[in-house]
View (tube, rainbow, N blue to C red):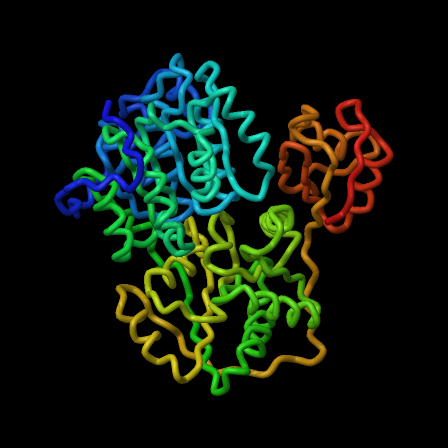
Length: 483
């Protein structure tokens, strides 16, 4: 194994990545791939029979040990693609860190780690550890002292542990960069360079990105050896979307246009993109003043607040989430009714990625963009991309008597979680048992380490709160509150 260099990124000479798109296998069954019996059994249990397009494109190269660049958006199945690859080559008897996965945000890191744990649940004694900022450093150091097979984390916290020699990467055989474009947008280029200097030269590197700008090409040239480049074109298909362009004459009319669009479409869930943290706060305040259930999400929030807002939005107990591009990463909503670009992105690929969050899996969707007359050049750049066409509309008037409907769900937080051995079935049983209500009034249940979150229909939330606070869950007493 090559010695670890003392500093500086691993610079390798490499040909340009091959630009072919591998034709998906005729037989898309996971069983057609050389996966271990444990993994195939788990996939069968999970009812994962056929591969998604990005999985069929990428798994053969991943399982063969090749470096790979995969272009696909959130929700395409890319996590399972690289998760199966790294689990298949894992030597569980070797209790050393063998895989490092970098993610731009804690939310995405948690999702990735949980999916890897789920896929690897039949692999005996496997340990997957998350290392992210926003949580105490000491317990993470203690967990590292006990060892791990797979580490998933954010670049800043990973680099901290490497610098303090808590994390040793000498045995890494797989290095994964997930949502690489967002990590570079967040300014992590130098940190990724430092992390790469601790990695063995002989390894597999997998890079997944929704977009492929020049800085991603440069990163690939630094870290990868002759990678295959596959792209899930269907993941960026916007044919099922209505794209509406609302033109404003005065820049001060943006918020007025947003209110008009929300009134016109009346979405149950809407994601609004702004360019800066400050504007997300201002827009959220303006919407709340008009009766909308709306909150901002950005990088300067406390991690607890970010987690709770994402959970509420996912649970449909928050109608409008106003986000920066970075903060919206890791947000995976299957049926998002409306996306609004409060500001147009100057990059057409980012625009396509934003609007691709609605109209998924055959569902219809609407994406609205607000543009001042001075932004004609941005519109031209977007419409120059294949399949990108706007319906034009001018700003209309909002009704003074209009009041939006409140969210149909309410999220309750319970002061117990995995550490208290709480499971989703326990929460469901407490709400639907004696003196409870019908199960179809219970929505998503999320179990964290110390907390549980359950969405219930607005008509029964007070009853649900009483059932938990005055009764027992799994034979134990817990406290709950409405978020």
